[in-house]
Picture: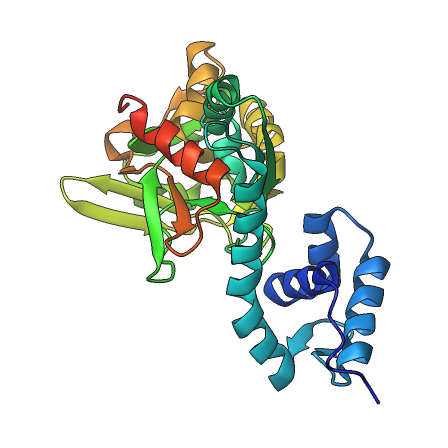
Length: 304
C-alpha cells in the first residue's frame, strides 16, 4: 500500500505538471531538456508512490485522470509560488539574483527579445535567463516558466500584460521580381488565391493567417500552399520566395531586408495590416524578484 504521507519529490511533481500541460512525454522532455523515457519513468514513480494513476496513456495521446486533473489544479499554483520563493531567497535586498525563465514564440527571437535581454543582463549580471521557444499556446507557469510572451492571446483573468518591444507591427506580402514577371502582380487580396503561395505552419499544426486590411475592410485569405514550411524554418521559406517559388506573407520587419536588396518586392502594400506588438504576460499571484526586475526594466524603456 502506498505511503501517502511520505513527502513527494518536488522534481517529480514538476515533471508530471510539464507532461500534463504539454500533452505528452516527448513535449515535456523537450521543454525540460531530458529524455522522454526519463519523463515517463518519473511519472510512473510518482503514480506508484501515490497509489493512483494520474495519466491515461494511449499510443497517440496522454489524458489526465480525475486524480491527475485535481493534482494539476491544486499543485500548479503552489509550484509557481515555490519557484518565486526560491528566487526571492537567492536575492539580497539590493541585488537581484536567481533565474528568469520565459516561454516565448519564435517570432520575438529575431529582433525583439535579444536586445532586451542584453540590456537587462548588463544591469543585473547575477540573473540567469532561460528562454523556452515554443509556438504553442501553453500554460507557461505549469511548465516551469515565470512569464510568457504572446501576441493577442486571451489568458486567465489573473494575468497581467506589459508591452514588450514595438507597440505596433505590420504584416507584409512580397514576392521575387522574376515570379511577378511570369505570373503578374495581384491587384486585390482575392487574386492571391490564383497564385503560388509559400505558407508557414506552427508546430501546433495551424497555418499562419494571411490577413489584409484597407479602409476598415478586413479580408482573410487561405490560399493553397504550393510550399508549406514549419515556422522554425521561416528563413528557408524566405529564400524559396527569393528563388521565385511564390508569394510569401510574414512580418514586415523580417521581409524588409530582402526588399532593400531588391530580392523581394512589395505586393498589395496598401492592404498590409497593422497589429499590436507582443506583450509579456505573468501571474498577479507570483512575482519572483528577477521577473519583477525585468518588468521594471521594460517599463522604464522609451516607447517605440
